[in-house]
Each structure stands twice: as C-alpha cells, then as structure tokens.
Length: 317
Ligand code: NDP
Image (cartoon, rainbow, N blue to C red):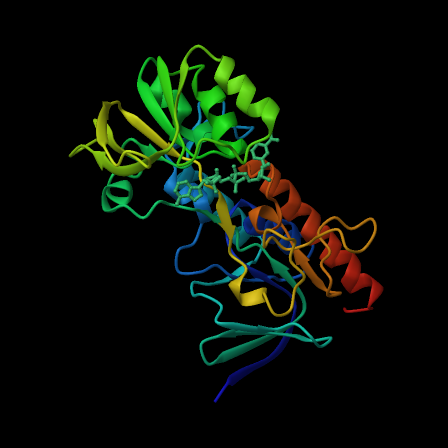
C-alpha cells in the first residue's frame, strides 16, 4: 500500500550531483520549494574524486566531496527539502507526476532527472580496492597526480585515446591497453595517440589484475592470442571503457538515445526538455560527450529555468 503525500509539489529533483544540486539552488531561489530525492549515495561521481582543480571559483582547488557539500548547503539555504533515499518507481505519464520512495508516494507538476552516469569498470577486485589510490576513471580529475610517472589507460574508444593523450602531458610514459587490435575510436584520435612518443600501444591484451597493496605498483596483462601473461611496472591505471547512464527507472517512460542516455532538447528552444512535457533532464544522464562537473551544473540551471517556464505556462501557482 502506498502512503500518499497529499501535497502536490512544483518540482521534484531526482539525483544530487552538480546538475541536480544546481537545479535545486535555482528552483529554491525561484520559490519553487523543490523536493530533492538525493539517493543513498548522494553527491554523484565527484564523491569518488579527490581534488577538483577545474571548477571555476576555486583557484586553489577543492576536494570533490567538499564541493558537493557546499552545493548542498547552498540548495538547503534557500529551502530545498531533501530525502536521503533512492527513488524506487516513477509514473510520469499524467499531468501530475508520481514518484515513489519505497511505499511513500510523492506528487509534482514537474520532475527534473539528474541521476548521472557511472563509469564502467572491469570488475576486478583490486581495481575497486585501489580506486582513488592509483586506479581512476577520470583523467581530467586525476591526471595531475601522475607527474613523471608511468601509467596505463585501458580502452579502445575515443575516451581512451583522448585520456592517453591528455595524460601524456604529465606522465613519463603511457601504456594504452586494448583487448583487440582494431579500435572503436575515430581514426584521427588513434593516429594522434600512435604518433605520441610517450604512448605505447599494448593491443590484444586483457587487463588481468592490478598489482599493489597500498597503491598501484603494476598491472598484469594477458595476451588474447598467445594466452601469455606479462607484468608491467607502473603507478596509475585509468579505466576508460565507457559509462552507463543511470536510467533504469526511466527506460519505460523516457525516450533514450541509442546509447541509453535520456534524449533532451525534444521541445525546440528548451535544451533539457524530454519527450514528456514537464519532465526535464540534466547532467551526465543526458550528456555522453562533455561529462564535466561544470557542464552538468550549467545544464542543471537550464533544467530549473525550463521547469519554471513550464509551470508559468501551465498557470501553476
Ligand atoms: P566507447 O563505448 O566508444 O568505447 C569503449 C571502449 O572500451 C571500447 O574500445 C571497448 O572495447 C572497451 N571496453 C568496453 N568494455 C571493456 C571491457 N570489459 N574490457 C576491456 N575493454 C572494454 O566509450 P568511450 O567512453 O570511449 O566513448 C563514449 C562516446 O563519447 C563515444 O561516442 C565517443 O566517440 C565520445 N567521445 C568523443 C570524444 C571526442 O570526440 N573528442 C572524446 C571522448 C569520447 P571494444 O572496442 O573491444 O568493444
């Protein structure tokens, strides 16, 4: 049995990374009294990073979790209400949108989806154990910490090529480890990486294990053709094998692009609009390209303004 909350909210925001929290700041300041369902693992991907040096306004850098706690405090200051649970079900079909947290049912005129994306992992025990201690899924976040060190990038897509090139600015050497000898990445990106003297390609190789106790000291590769293993001594591993948008809750109701990201910009002139009027999406759940905290925050602002416009158009006081 659902326990229905009788109040119809102006906006419910699902997800609490930079996109969701920025939309909350704007919605709260716009007097929309947002309800944010922030999830058990609140704060999004920045909670998994250490120092963020490219978020404007922090010339000395800021720790990822600290940045998220500041954004949350700002959203709270203007009256955002938070529920620290996961949404379990949604029904976005009617004019009044329904959102469930277990047996509790919440209603709203608009919903902003900002559930983010998760970096894919290889699934090795030592990969998770050494995450943030030599293993990373974000070159732009963590590259700087690998100055003059030997590192590896795993993957054969554009992200892996771009990250290998980017990381070669810091690292003394970058191994590009890929499980095949042809690439999903565009030709120009592969060629750029191949021409980079600091990058050595290790193709037809599977990352079998990450070595090290307190930090990364090496990796074990297995050749897919010969079956032979080899160990490489290095200090960092960047896993760049794609992301999965967190859209499980919405796969029945919202239109997704071929890669599973929420399709936005459906209504002309409203970049965060989805196929359902009154439902908006922002941040990494709809962005497969830029994936930066600042671009997510920017789209969160846009989602809030789009929701505000929708409410005004529908005379919701
Ligand atoms: P992709 O899905 O394009 O590539 C993922 C890569 O990871 C593939 O080479 C794949 O191997 C490999 N991979 C997947 N799973 C495993 C696994 N379990 N073990 C080993 N390897 C694995 O993801 P990207 O993040 O690279 O790119 C996402 C999108 O973003 C793309 O559309 C890309 O074009 C775009 N992008 C564009 C950039 C640019 O233009 N500047 C920069 C970065 C991204 P396999 O090939 O064998 O399947």
